[in-house]
Image (cartoon, rainbow, N blue to C red; front, top):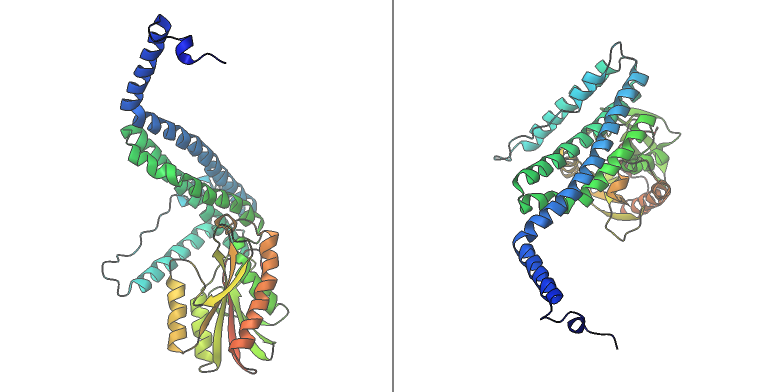
Length: 372
């Protein structure tokens, strides 16, 4: 039998009394300082993450400057222009009176888009239109990394100054989710620099598969369409114009085609990337109803209004992916999923329409690295 603690250190012995006093003192210290100890522990973890985010942010800035120099061949150092671009911000319109807020949002987004394009063209005078689009996407990814870094730093410094555990917990609890997004934007830097397709482009790639080899025309800003006779119907396939990085204006394109083919279009089928739940496989394809498009909602509103105004049903095909895949280079599972998406479109066409009908098929998403 092993001796007990009481046998080794009797309470009435000097060593036993010392150990008991130390234990009692430790308990009292923890009782009064547990929250502060926990705050300091969380702060150290946030500090380590902040250093990592700063390194990623600085790498994004470096890649942006090098790419502007390499592609744009500016006559002067683009560093001040890039740094100014990374500090851009967007002020949403007032929402106290919701009437007309979509139009206000759309107008501000157009101004922002035009401003970004003008700044990139000034920074990179030798870049082609596709290269300008890719540079704009690259700089926006670097801008997002800069914002993430500043927000994390803000909560870290505020928590360190006040030692308020509730301030520190706010950033500590969501850091794992934030880091997934930051790592995705970090991967996006190389994708936009090299003009590689990204996960968000699966809808555009599905449309490109359908329209490949057919004559296309521009129907709205940075949007192209092709008439494709298939499965006994006429498909009007839409996507953003590639291979530069752009999402175009799908709402304007759909409204224009519905107006041109008044009463002839029998269905709208939209194909887009969608966030997957944990446990779902990457590249899973699901079918549904509604406007499959992300963003702040301006283009979605336009599409829904057009479909309602022309009494055309809206169908959706979603290609599931994790948030870390959205702006990162497209993985093989997502590339293969576009074939399943084409099959889903075929099934919807055959089940929801009749032979001879006209159907709009819109591939939604960033078309970087994806041509027509």
